[in-house]
Image (tube, rainbow, N blue to C red; front, side, top):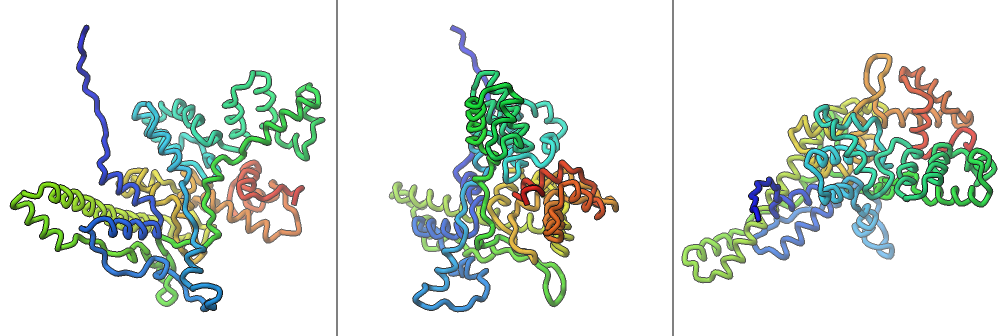
Length: 440
Protein backbone atom coordinates (compact mmCIF):
# COMPACT_ATOMS: atom_id res chain seq x y z
CA UNK A 1 0.00 0.00 0.00
CA UNK A 2 1.29 3.44 -0.94
CA UNK A 3 0.40 6.27 1.37
CA UNK A 4 -0.06 9.57 -0.40
CA UNK A 5 0.00 12.93 1.31
CA UNK A 6 -1.97 15.64 -0.43
CA UNK A 7 -2.17 19.33 0.40
CA UNK A 8 -5.65 20.73 -0.11
CA UNK A 9 -6.81 24.32 0.34
CA UNK A 10 -10.06 24.65 2.26
CA UNK A 11 -12.05 27.72 3.10
CA UNK A 12 -13.76 27.43 6.47
CA UNK A 13 -16.08 30.17 7.64
CA UNK A 14 -16.01 31.09 11.31
CA UNK A 15 -19.27 31.43 13.21
CA UNK A 16 -18.69 35.17 13.35
CA UNK A 17 -18.28 35.38 9.55
CA UNK A 18 -21.44 33.32 9.02
CA UNK A 19 -23.33 35.64 11.39
CA UNK A 20 -22.12 38.71 9.49
CA UNK A 21 -23.35 37.26 6.19
CA UNK A 22 -26.73 36.39 7.70
CA UNK A 23 -27.20 39.86 9.19
CA UNK A 24 -26.48 41.47 5.81
CA UNK A 25 -29.45 39.56 4.38
CA UNK A 26 -31.97 40.51 7.06
CA UNK A 27 -34.47 43.29 6.38
CA UNK A 28 -34.38 46.03 8.98
CA UNK A 29 -37.29 44.82 11.15
CA UNK A 30 -35.87 41.29 11.30
CA UNK A 31 -32.55 42.88 12.25
CA UNK A 32 -34.25 44.54 15.23
CA UNK A 33 -35.78 41.22 16.24
CA UNK A 34 -32.38 39.51 16.02
CA UNK A 35 -30.80 42.15 18.29
CA UNK A 36 -33.60 41.69 20.83
CA UNK A 37 -33.19 37.90 20.75
CA UNK A 38 -29.43 38.16 21.31
CA UNK A 39 -29.94 40.66 24.14
CA UNK A 40 -32.23 38.20 25.94
CA UNK A 41 -29.82 35.28 25.64
CA UNK A 42 -26.39 36.94 26.01
CA UNK A 43 -25.51 38.82 29.25
CA UNK A 44 -22.64 40.64 27.53
CA UNK A 45 -24.98 42.50 25.17
CA UNK A 46 -26.11 45.91 26.29
CA UNK A 47 -28.68 47.62 24.07
CA UNK A 48 -29.51 51.31 24.19
CA UNK A 49 -33.16 52.29 24.08
CA UNK A 50 -34.23 53.30 20.58
CA UNK A 51 -37.32 53.71 18.47
CA UNK A 52 -38.05 50.82 16.16
CA UNK A 53 -37.48 51.35 12.44
CA UNK A 54 -41.25 51.31 11.94
CA UNK A 55 -41.72 54.20 14.39
CA UNK A 56 -38.73 56.04 12.92
CA UNK A 57 -40.09 55.73 9.39
CA UNK A 58 -43.85 55.75 9.96
CA UNK A 59 -45.48 58.72 8.24
CA UNK A 60 -48.12 60.74 10.07
CA UNK A 61 -51.42 58.99 9.74
CA UNK A 62 -54.93 59.64 10.99
CA UNK A 63 -55.59 57.95 14.30
CA UNK A 64 -57.40 54.65 14.12
CA UNK A 65 -60.33 54.11 16.53
CA UNK A 66 -59.65 51.77 19.45
CA UNK A 67 -62.10 49.17 18.17
CA UNK A 68 -60.05 48.86 14.99
CA UNK A 69 -56.83 48.19 16.86
CA UNK A 70 -53.72 50.08 17.89
CA UNK A 71 -52.22 52.36 15.21
CA UNK A 72 -48.78 50.78 15.50
CA UNK A 73 -50.24 47.26 15.25
CA UNK A 74 -52.16 48.32 12.14
CA UNK A 75 -48.90 49.51 10.59
CA UNK A 76 -46.85 46.49 11.63
CA UNK A 77 -49.40 43.98 10.33
CA UNK A 78 -49.09 45.46 6.85
CA UNK A 79 -45.33 45.28 6.60
CA UNK A 80 -44.24 42.79 3.98
CA UNK A 81 -43.13 39.36 5.18
CA UNK A 82 -39.73 38.80 3.60
CA UNK A 83 -38.90 35.36 2.24
CA UNK A 84 -35.88 33.74 0.64
CA UNK A 85 -35.04 35.41 -2.64
CA UNK A 86 -33.96 33.63 -5.82
CA UNK A 87 -30.25 34.42 -5.41
CA UNK A 88 -30.18 33.09 -1.83
CA UNK A 89 -32.03 29.95 -2.94
CA UNK A 90 -29.48 29.34 -5.71
CA UNK A 91 -26.50 30.30 -3.55
CA UNK A 92 -27.29 27.50 -1.07
CA UNK A 93 -27.46 24.94 -3.87
CA UNK A 94 -24.23 26.17 -5.48
CA UNK A 95 -22.42 26.03 -2.13
CA UNK A 96 -23.35 22.34 -1.82
CA UNK A 97 -22.07 21.38 -5.29
CA UNK A 98 -18.89 19.34 -5.61
CA UNK A 99 -17.37 21.46 -8.37
CA UNK A 100 -14.19 23.47 -8.84
CA UNK A 101 -13.93 26.99 -7.44
CA UNK A 102 -13.71 28.62 -10.89
CA UNK A 103 -17.02 27.16 -12.05
CA UNK A 104 -18.60 27.97 -8.69
CA UNK A 105 -17.48 31.60 -8.99
CA UNK A 106 -19.02 31.89 -12.47
CA UNK A 107 -22.24 30.23 -11.26
CA UNK A 108 -22.61 32.80 -8.47
CA UNK A 109 -22.08 35.64 -10.94
CA UNK A 110 -24.74 34.18 -13.25
CA UNK A 111 -27.16 33.66 -10.37
CA UNK A 112 -26.80 37.29 -9.30
CA UNK A 113 -27.58 38.48 -12.85
CA UNK A 114 -31.01 36.81 -13.12
CA UNK A 115 -34.07 39.05 -13.13
CA UNK A 116 -37.30 38.47 -11.16
CA UNK A 117 -38.47 35.88 -13.70
CA UNK A 118 -35.22 33.92 -13.41
CA UNK A 119 -34.09 35.09 -16.88
CA UNK A 120 -30.93 36.83 -18.10
CA UNK A 121 -31.67 40.44 -19.11
CA UNK A 122 -28.90 40.20 -21.74
CA UNK A 123 -26.27 37.68 -22.87
CA UNK A 124 -24.94 35.52 -20.02
CA UNK A 125 -21.39 36.35 -21.10
CA UNK A 126 -22.04 40.00 -20.13
CA UNK A 127 -21.99 38.98 -16.47
CA UNK A 128 -18.75 37.02 -16.55
CA UNK A 129 -15.23 38.43 -16.67
CA UNK A 130 -13.33 37.79 -19.90
CA UNK A 131 -10.84 35.45 -18.21
CA UNK A 132 -13.71 33.35 -16.76
CA UNK A 133 -15.67 32.84 -19.99
CA UNK A 134 -13.98 29.50 -20.63
CA UNK A 135 -16.04 28.14 -17.71
CA UNK A 136 -19.32 29.66 -18.96
CA UNK A 137 -20.77 26.75 -20.96
CA UNK A 138 -20.20 24.27 -18.11
CA UNK A 139 -21.60 26.74 -15.56
CA UNK A 140 -24.75 27.27 -17.66
CA UNK A 141 -25.28 23.52 -17.95
CA UNK A 142 -25.14 23.25 -14.15
CA UNK A 143 -27.36 26.33 -13.65
CA UNK A 144 -30.05 24.70 -15.79
CA UNK A 145 -30.15 21.71 -13.41
CA UNK A 146 -30.74 23.80 -10.28
CA UNK A 147 -34.09 24.47 -8.63
CA UNK A 148 -36.30 26.02 -9.90
CA UNK A 149 -35.73 24.31 -13.25
CA UNK A 150 -36.01 26.73 -16.15
CA UNK A 151 -33.91 29.58 -14.77
CA UNK A 152 -30.98 30.93 -16.77
CA UNK A 153 -33.12 31.36 -19.89
CA UNK A 154 -33.72 34.40 -22.08
CA UNK A 155 -37.45 34.00 -22.68
CA UNK A 156 -40.50 31.96 -21.75
CA UNK A 157 -39.95 29.61 -24.71
CA UNK A 158 -36.28 29.14 -23.78
CA UNK A 159 -37.23 28.42 -20.15
CA UNK A 160 -39.90 25.88 -21.17
CA UNK A 161 -37.35 24.12 -23.39
CA UNK A 162 -34.96 23.77 -20.44
CA UNK A 163 -37.76 22.33 -18.33
CA UNK A 164 -38.79 19.92 -21.11
CA UNK A 165 -35.23 18.57 -21.42
CA UNK A 166 -35.22 17.85 -17.69
CA UNK A 167 -38.27 15.56 -17.96
CA UNK A 168 -36.28 12.66 -19.46
CA UNK A 169 -38.81 11.91 -22.21
CA UNK A 170 -38.15 10.04 -25.44
CA UNK A 171 -36.58 12.06 -28.24
CA UNK A 172 -39.75 12.33 -30.37
CA UNK A 173 -41.94 13.65 -27.54
CA UNK A 174 -39.17 15.99 -26.38
CA UNK A 175 -38.79 17.42 -29.90
CA UNK A 176 -42.56 17.86 -30.22
CA UNK A 177 -42.80 19.65 -26.88
CA UNK A 178 -39.90 21.97 -27.73
CA UNK A 179 -41.61 22.78 -31.05
CA UNK A 180 -44.77 23.80 -29.13
CA UNK A 181 -42.70 25.79 -26.61
CA UNK A 182 -41.23 27.76 -29.51
CA UNK A 183 -44.68 28.29 -31.07
CA UNK A 184 -46.88 29.00 -28.06
CA UNK A 185 -49.40 30.93 -30.15
CA UNK A 186 -50.49 27.56 -31.54
CA UNK A 187 -52.06 26.50 -28.25
CA UNK A 188 -54.08 29.69 -27.71
CA UNK A 189 -57.60 28.81 -26.48
CA UNK A 190 -56.46 25.15 -26.16
CA UNK A 191 -56.89 24.54 -29.90
CA UNK A 192 -55.34 21.29 -31.05
CA UNK A 193 -55.89 21.41 -34.83
CA UNK A 194 -52.77 23.45 -35.60
CA UNK A 195 -50.60 21.22 -33.42
CA UNK A 196 -52.05 18.07 -35.01
CA UNK A 197 -51.32 19.40 -38.47
CA UNK A 198 -47.83 20.72 -37.70
CA UNK A 199 -46.65 17.55 -35.91
CA UNK A 200 -48.79 15.03 -37.81
CA UNK A 201 -50.26 13.53 -34.62
CA UNK A 202 -53.79 12.64 -33.46
CA UNK A 203 -55.97 14.77 -31.19
CA UNK A 204 -55.32 12.76 -27.99
CA UNK A 205 -51.55 13.09 -28.42
CA UNK A 206 -51.89 16.80 -29.14
CA UNK A 207 -53.97 17.30 -25.97
CA UNK A 208 -51.41 15.36 -23.91
CA UNK A 209 -48.57 17.51 -25.19
CA UNK A 210 -50.50 20.71 -24.49
CA UNK A 211 -51.29 19.52 -20.95
CA UNK A 212 -47.58 18.89 -20.33
CA UNK A 213 -46.70 22.39 -21.57
CA UNK A 214 -49.37 23.92 -19.32
CA UNK A 215 -47.97 22.03 -16.30
CA UNK A 216 -44.61 23.82 -16.71
CA UNK A 217 -43.69 27.20 -15.20
CA UNK A 218 -43.29 30.06 -17.70
CA UNK A 219 -41.57 32.33 -15.13
CA UNK A 220 -39.61 30.03 -12.77
CA UNK A 221 -38.23 32.88 -10.62
CA UNK A 222 -41.66 34.41 -10.03
CA UNK A 223 -42.39 32.62 -6.75
CA UNK A 224 -39.39 34.33 -5.16
CA UNK A 225 -40.56 37.81 -6.11
CA UNK A 226 -41.27 40.33 -3.36
CA UNK A 227 -44.65 42.06 -3.50
CA UNK A 228 -43.59 45.66 -3.38
CA UNK A 229 -47.12 47.03 -3.45
CA UNK A 230 -47.47 46.19 0.26
CA UNK A 231 -46.17 48.53 2.96
CA UNK A 232 -42.47 47.98 3.59
CA UNK A 233 -39.87 49.59 5.81
CA UNK A 234 -37.08 50.75 3.48
CA UNK A 235 -33.40 50.50 4.38
CA UNK A 236 -32.52 53.81 2.74
CA UNK A 237 -34.20 57.05 1.75
CA UNK A 238 -32.77 59.04 -1.19
CA UNK A 239 -34.98 62.07 -1.74
CA UNK A 240 -34.81 65.71 -2.73
CA UNK A 241 -34.92 68.20 0.14
CA UNK A 242 -37.95 70.41 -0.58
CA UNK A 243 -36.17 73.51 0.74
CA UNK A 244 -32.58 73.16 -0.50
CA UNK A 245 -33.48 71.04 -3.59
CA UNK A 246 -30.40 68.93 -2.80
CA UNK A 247 -30.73 65.13 -2.89
CA UNK A 248 -30.17 63.71 0.58
CA UNK A 249 -29.46 60.19 1.83
CA UNK A 250 -31.06 58.90 5.03
CA UNK A 251 -30.01 55.49 6.34
CA UNK A 252 -32.80 53.90 8.39
CA UNK A 253 -30.19 51.52 9.79
CA UNK A 254 -29.22 54.47 11.99
CA UNK A 255 -32.48 53.83 13.87
CA UNK A 256 -31.23 50.41 14.96
CA UNK A 257 -30.33 50.19 18.66
CA UNK A 258 -26.72 50.77 19.66
CA UNK A 259 -25.17 47.54 20.91
CA UNK A 260 -22.21 47.54 23.31
CA UNK A 261 -20.50 45.21 25.78
CA UNK A 262 -21.94 45.15 29.30
CA UNK A 263 -19.24 46.69 31.60
CA UNK A 264 -20.34 44.64 34.65
CA UNK A 265 -19.77 41.36 32.84
CA UNK A 266 -16.49 42.61 31.39
CA UNK A 267 -15.29 43.22 34.97
CA UNK A 268 -16.57 39.81 36.07
CA UNK A 269 -14.66 38.16 33.21
CA UNK A 270 -11.47 40.08 34.06
CA UNK A 271 -11.68 38.92 37.69
CA UNK A 272 -12.21 35.28 36.72
CA UNK A 273 -9.30 35.40 34.27
CA UNK A 274 -7.01 36.38 37.16
CA UNK A 275 -7.73 33.45 39.49
CA UNK A 276 -8.97 30.92 36.86
CA UNK A 277 -10.70 28.80 39.51
CA UNK A 278 -14.19 28.62 38.01
CA UNK A 279 -13.29 27.35 34.54
CA UNK A 280 -16.89 26.54 33.59
CA UNK A 281 -18.11 30.10 34.22
CA UNK A 282 -14.97 31.50 32.61
CA UNK A 283 -15.64 29.50 29.44
CA UNK A 284 -19.30 30.62 29.40
CA UNK A 285 -18.33 34.29 29.71
CA UNK A 286 -15.55 34.10 27.12
CA UNK A 287 -17.87 32.41 24.63
CA UNK A 288 -20.65 34.98 25.08
CA UNK A 289 -18.22 37.90 24.93
CA UNK A 290 -16.99 36.61 21.55
CA UNK A 291 -20.59 36.27 20.29
CA UNK A 292 -21.37 39.81 21.42
CA UNK A 293 -18.25 41.18 19.70
CA UNK A 294 -19.23 39.35 16.49
CA UNK A 295 -22.73 40.87 16.63
CA UNK A 296 -21.34 44.39 17.13
CA UNK A 297 -18.86 43.89 14.28
CA UNK A 298 -21.60 42.50 12.02
CA UNK A 299 -23.87 45.47 12.74
CA UNK A 300 -21.09 47.92 11.92
CA UNK A 301 -20.33 46.13 8.63
CA UNK A 302 -24.03 46.09 7.74
CA UNK A 303 -24.48 49.82 8.42
CA UNK A 304 -21.25 50.82 6.68
CA UNK A 305 -21.81 48.80 3.51
CA UNK A 306 -25.51 49.70 3.19
CA UNK A 307 -24.52 53.37 3.36
CA UNK A 308 -21.70 52.90 0.84
CA UNK A 309 -24.08 51.23 -1.63
CA UNK A 310 -26.61 54.05 -1.11
CA UNK A 311 -24.02 56.71 -2.00
CA UNK A 312 -22.82 54.60 -4.94
CA UNK A 313 -26.40 54.54 -6.27
CA UNK A 314 -26.81 58.27 -5.70
CA UNK A 315 -23.69 58.91 -7.77
CA UNK A 316 -24.54 56.37 -10.49
CA UNK A 317 -28.27 57.07 -10.72
CA UNK A 318 -28.44 60.79 -9.92
CA UNK A 319 -30.68 61.46 -12.94
CA UNK A 320 -33.12 58.83 -11.68
CA UNK A 321 -33.39 60.49 -8.25
CA UNK A 322 -33.76 63.90 -9.93
CA UNK A 323 -36.19 63.02 -12.72
CA UNK A 324 -37.66 59.55 -12.23
CA UNK A 325 -37.54 55.94 -13.53
CA UNK A 326 -37.21 56.87 -17.21
CA UNK A 327 -33.70 58.17 -16.43
CA UNK A 328 -32.40 54.93 -14.94
CA UNK A 329 -29.04 53.97 -16.46
CA UNK A 330 -27.68 50.42 -16.90
CA UNK A 331 -25.74 48.99 -13.99
CA UNK A 332 -24.92 45.62 -12.39
CA UNK A 333 -24.14 44.29 -8.93
CA UNK A 334 -20.77 43.17 -10.29
CA UNK A 335 -19.87 46.75 -11.24
CA UNK A 336 -21.00 48.00 -7.83
CA UNK A 337 -18.96 45.33 -6.04
CA UNK A 338 -15.84 46.22 -8.03
CA UNK A 339 -16.28 49.96 -7.48
CA UNK A 340 -16.63 49.52 -3.70
CA UNK A 341 -14.08 46.67 -3.39
CA UNK A 342 -16.78 44.40 -1.96
CA UNK A 343 -17.60 40.81 -2.83
CA UNK A 344 -20.51 40.22 -5.22
CA UNK A 345 -22.15 38.15 -2.48
CA UNK A 346 -22.05 41.11 -0.04
CA UNK A 347 -23.69 43.47 -2.54
CA UNK A 348 -26.31 40.86 -3.43
CA UNK A 349 -27.18 40.18 0.22
CA UNK A 350 -27.64 43.89 0.88
CA UNK A 351 -29.60 44.51 -2.33
CA UNK A 352 -32.01 41.59 -2.40
CA UNK A 353 -35.29 41.79 -0.52
CA UNK A 354 -34.78 45.38 0.66
CA UNK A 355 -36.16 48.72 -0.53
CA UNK A 356 -35.15 52.34 -1.16
CA UNK A 357 -37.59 55.19 -0.58
CA UNK A 358 -37.46 57.79 -3.36
CA UNK A 359 -39.55 60.73 -4.57
CA UNK A 360 -40.99 58.29 -7.13
CA UNK A 361 -42.06 55.63 -4.62
CA UNK A 362 -40.47 52.56 -3.05
CA UNK A 363 -38.16 50.46 -5.21
CA UNK A 364 -36.29 47.22 -4.48
CA UNK A 365 -32.57 47.97 -4.27
CA UNK A 366 -32.09 45.26 -6.91
CA UNK A 367 -34.19 47.39 -9.31
CA UNK A 368 -31.20 49.70 -9.76
CA UNK A 369 -29.05 46.82 -11.01
CA UNK A 370 -31.02 46.07 -14.14
CA UNK A 371 -28.56 45.38 -16.94
CA UNK A 372 -24.95 45.55 -17.98
CA UNK A 373 -25.54 46.67 -21.54
CA UNK A 374 -28.17 49.33 -21.94
CA UNK A 375 -29.78 50.81 -25.02
CA UNK A 376 -28.32 53.81 -26.76
CA UNK A 377 -30.14 57.06 -27.37
CA UNK A 378 -29.61 59.54 -30.14
CA UNK A 379 -27.55 61.68 -27.78
CA UNK A 380 -25.30 58.64 -27.02
CA UNK A 381 -26.65 58.43 -23.46
CA UNK A 382 -27.36 54.95 -22.11
CA UNK A 383 -30.81 53.92 -20.95
CA UNK A 384 -31.52 50.77 -18.94
CA UNK A 385 -33.98 47.95 -19.40
CA UNK A 386 -36.17 49.14 -16.53
CA UNK A 387 -36.23 52.66 -17.98
CA UNK A 388 -37.38 51.20 -21.31
CA UNK A 389 -40.20 49.39 -19.48
CA UNK A 390 -41.29 52.65 -17.87
CA UNK A 391 -41.39 54.28 -21.31
CA UNK A 392 -43.48 51.39 -22.70
CA UNK A 393 -46.00 51.77 -19.85
CA UNK A 394 -46.12 55.52 -20.44
CA UNK A 395 -46.71 55.13 -24.21
CA UNK A 396 -49.52 52.61 -23.64
CA UNK A 397 -51.12 54.83 -21.00
CA UNK A 398 -51.02 57.83 -23.34
CA UNK A 399 -52.59 55.72 -26.13
CA UNK A 400 -54.93 53.53 -24.07
CA UNK A 401 -57.68 53.67 -26.70
CA UNK A 402 -55.43 52.86 -29.66
CA UNK A 403 -54.32 49.25 -28.93
CA UNK A 404 -50.79 49.89 -30.16
CA UNK A 405 -48.92 46.95 -31.69
CA UNK A 406 -45.36 46.10 -30.58
CA UNK A 407 -44.04 47.62 -33.82
CA UNK A 408 -45.90 50.88 -33.17
CA UNK A 409 -44.52 50.96 -29.61
CA UNK A 410 -41.02 50.41 -31.03
CA UNK A 411 -41.63 53.25 -33.52
CA UNK A 412 -42.77 55.55 -30.69
CA UNK A 413 -39.62 54.71 -28.72
CA UNK A 414 -37.47 55.35 -31.77
CA UNK A 415 -39.13 58.77 -32.11
CA UNK A 416 -37.98 59.45 -28.54
CA UNK A 417 -34.44 58.58 -29.62
CA UNK A 418 -34.43 55.08 -28.10
CA UNK A 419 -33.24 52.50 -30.62
CA UNK A 420 -35.08 49.24 -30.00
CA UNK A 421 -36.38 46.29 -32.05
CA UNK A 422 -40.00 45.10 -32.12
CA UNK A 423 -39.08 41.70 -30.66
CA UNK A 424 -37.41 43.41 -27.69
CA UNK A 425 -40.56 45.47 -27.09
CA UNK A 426 -42.57 42.23 -27.15
CA UNK A 427 -40.22 40.65 -24.60
CA UNK A 428 -40.46 43.61 -22.20
CA UNK A 429 -44.23 43.86 -22.66
CA UNK A 430 -44.50 40.19 -21.65
CA UNK A 431 -42.33 40.82 -18.58
CA UNK A 432 -44.68 43.65 -17.62
CA UNK A 433 -47.62 41.20 -17.96
CA UNK A 434 -49.22 43.44 -20.60
CA UNK A 435 -51.32 41.63 -23.19
CA UNK A 436 -50.82 41.85 -26.94
CA UNK A 437 -52.68 44.54 -28.92
CA UNK A 438 -55.13 41.86 -30.09
CA UNK A 439 -55.88 40.76 -26.51
CA UNK A 440 -56.12 44.35 -25.24
